[in-house]
Image (cartoon, rainbow, N blue to C red; front, top):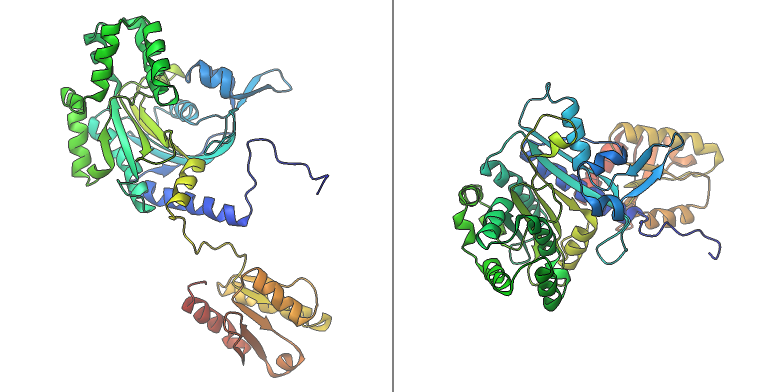
Length: 429
């Protein structure tokens, strides 16, 4: 083991057990997204750095993106997020698409961050976006997709809430407090980091942006105002729509949610654990109506969110919500090889079973049956099949139930159906 080269820092090995969880998460995301009429798409892993410079802000480009020059000298980035690629793809075919477009994707991303609990440098992310609709009801639908996912995986509003605000409401509120327009972008970024800094540091930085003591005090009061959303026509319609969709229990207003990235233009939202120990946003999203124009397209309203797999998996583990019966075993049936003379017959039997829809592994070489049965136990197969000289002469196959130890010899023509029945009885077909 001394000479084993470790994985790159911040990346993960997906052994079959972890891969089963990732696949389950993907399949659940797919089911929820498709239930709302969203279509799956994918974009390149590599993009021009210029795409992110146009769209995502200095922090993502300068501090977090993996950037390199290719052999032709072009500046390339491993994608740190997907919205820029989505905007580019929409802009390329904007005249041909039927709007609103509802698209979703689940794939790998990279950010050069300090690895820690719930944060890695390579991660998988679920992206759900609607483009071409500008109403608060469209925003509510996008948030409803997320709420439906939380509900589908077994989380409750007592464990996770989606906190919602609107950049337009906050800009108007900042203006009402007399906060200079030049300071508002920096203040939004500071608000986004508020939970990560001590209260005295938060006040010191806010004052450093030019806020007076009175303005800071008024800002603090504003952030505590749970009725502030009622001043916004858009948020009143948004919450009415969420209520109509039957998901209001998962959604709350929170004036401190502003999202740090500069391209958000309206509704913004984040999911947070309620009173738990994951003291960071689980995921986030919002309205970004200017992005298509930034990458060369015609202006188009858009709303979307992104959910990473790392912190969501941690949360589901914490609440014991990961399925305990994920199919991590490679096959439900092992076909043994009695000896070299019967190897071809075992190959044919395995092929027959696969054609009948049974998942089958074939032991690769003749060996002692006891050793082959032990291997079957290790891969969590449920049935082991033996085709030896006696079975071959009589046209039968011996079927051993590895859960009970029961053994029976059946006509070869009946084996596939018998395997299906026994596996269905244990829900492991």
